[in-house]
Length: 149
Image 1 (cartoon, helix red, strand yellow):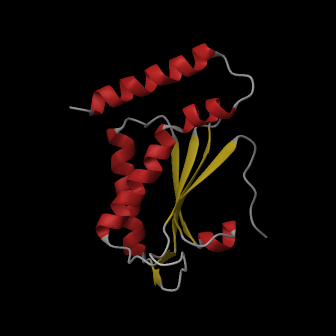
Image 2: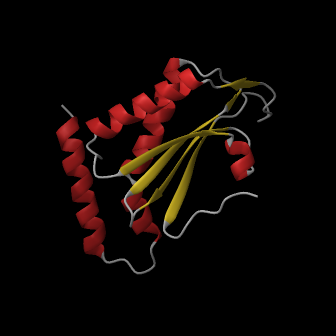
């Protein structure tokens, strides 16, 4: 049975599709070495963007079964109240072989979702005050200001 997100958790996915007709015919298995590279790149990016105040977890599983969608490379799930995040790498990659450059790109994509997590949640809130969005934008500007040279 698919697991449901717990209260306050927002789930995002990164997708890839085949180039013709969105038909996902060929799959490639990820290995423990691929997972180590994905995790290492996530750790590097979390540190460089200074998202160290999050409890970070990692998972390597079959995301198609968990979420009923094909083509998922990775998934990020977070809980803002608990300040916890899980970066999940799929055991199968569709269409693309899990090359180092692709694993790094997927890790960057997922970590950037985390960077924008609070802003995303605020944007979806019915009871939001303008100052909350302004505060989050200033927080993002400060984080980006530390890493952009």
